[in-house]
Structure formats: C-alpha cells, structure tokens
Length: 129
Image (cartoon, rainbow, N blue to C red; front, side):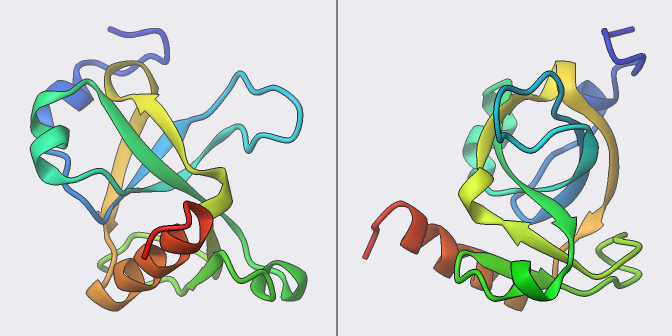
C-alpha cells in the first residue's frame, strides 16, 4: 500500500497518453493546483510504460473567466472520459507526478479532438512550433 492508500493501482494499470486519472497533487506551494483532481496524461506511451514519473495536465472546474484563457482547453463530461462536470484542462499547470505515489484512480480517456486541443495549448505554453 502506498502513502495515499492505493494498493498497487499504478503498477497494475497500463497508463496511456490521453487517459484521465485522478491524481493527488498535494502538497503544493504558492499558486500551484492542488488536492485530488482529474488530470490528463500527456507524456508519450513509451515513457508511460517505462518511467515512474508521468507528465499530467490538471482539470479544474469550468468558469467563463477560465474559458477565455488561451492555454485552457474546455472539456465536456462524457461516459468515455469519466469527467462528471464541465472542466478546463489548465495546460499552464502541467506537472510531473510519480505514478506510484500520486495516482488515485483511472476515470477514462479523452476524445482525440480534446487531446489535439491540449497539444495545441501545450505548444503555446512551451513555445513549440
């Protein structure tokens, strides 16, 4: 059992890019996004299979103000993504997490169009062409 009370979930689950997972983002410092929240895995599948640290984009509750931020991507709840409310993927808050220590549960997988929109936002955040 790990520190968050999970029994080997991260070891038993094949994590793939675009998967929506609940992650314990605490502790945080300053303005970082915290608590247990859904996040989208954005690392490539080769890393996801071999490296214990994955890169995630946290989801946060939708608001009109958040929806206007160009690096936020609107996500609507669907049966396949496991989200329960309208959200935004906050691509500015992208962070690495240890899959064995922070993964709480798997919710589902984003639609390809949502992942493509996240990719576009990440290109802006990291100044990639």
